Image (cartoon, rainbow, N blue to C red):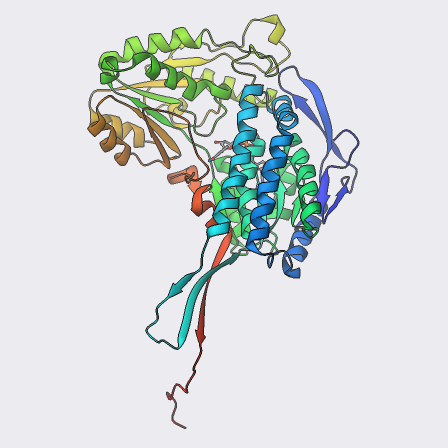
Length: 499
Ligand code: NAD
């Protein structure tokens, strides 16, 4: 960053081999926040080779589990020590409010603490094969060299869901943050360097490259030295990576997009109406809608639809937008001019498709926001599932509204998506709530709440939202191979062949 080398390869910090750099833009005002090294494909290949050498050397993967658990806890301590600096970088880079960034760093910390605890108690499984002379056990071993690719909306958070279990498992890795938002991951790598020096972790266990995915993709994902690719990002990129990985039958875990329904039943009128409105509002407009699990499809029961949408629109119009560094800001800008242009094209598409624009649909007219990539919270009513704006991930502050008349229709609409990442259900009828959450085909379903996740609980998608899971025990298992060891303590001849 700003003259310091940003690529961490084989334990040393380097500039890009061709000295290329990239300007990192603060989306709140369009200024250059930092200049970072832009890796070349050669740099990426060197990083993979360093991770391969560190894995094959064997010392790291043989580290006692207790030492790895202590290391993860130490990383968590350092994250808390540096919390404010990391949070500020995240805000400057993504535009999200500082309050959100601080929550992100706390969540990153909790992921390291969780995997520290989990790895410490993970036990092998002893299998009874019916012969007392045979000791048969199933053990877990690190999968090997991992390529970890993260998106720009939760840069360090998404990366931590990969690095923490990979380290816990004893893997080596190459981390590639989004080229749009690399700053917090670079700072985090410096923090890792400190923790690794204290614990004498060998060079090359974690390597960091940043740069364009299109340029570095092949070097990272078509590389036969890689054993596992964990990717979080868009559906189109996920497809490209899965195809690239197929050549060497490299295992891939994909955390892709979502088009997440939020089902609201009319009985919320008898319950806490204001909380229901609040959760739908927060579910879609937090971080200006740049959340993979954002509740962008409101599916609301007909009798309350008009009132519910009116209540939402009134509150959406009052959301305070501004620089994430300003404590008065409730939400920040979109991440880039390019991304805002995509969101704007979806708004135009919604209008062209005949959806009814209720609020938003424009940039804010506040001159103080003119240099940033801000866009107003936008609601479209009278939408239906034939519209692209209902089917496709817009990844911006756009809520579409569909109406239903009975429970079966609500479930059918909620499941009518090629994605399946997350969904919300609001009802004051507990039995109906339980029926509906079981009927929805999504990886996370919130009943009378929205947006929460926890390190011990798996996260991931049904359908085209991806495969594999992060967090929880399954999020660690992704980074482990399973081996069955059959040890015969009193072998005798099989006697099958007589000669
Ligand atoms: P993206 O797919 O454009 O980029 C994601 C990452 O992939 C970046 O680091 C990028 O540089 C890299 N990349 C791009 N092309 C590549 C290639 N050919 N080979 C290898 N890497 C390549 O996604 P984005 O715009 O950064 O992020 C937004 C998307 O991420 C949304 O679709 C969102 O839903 C999704 N997302 C999903 C989750 C989840 O948990 N399922 C979480 C956050 C974001």
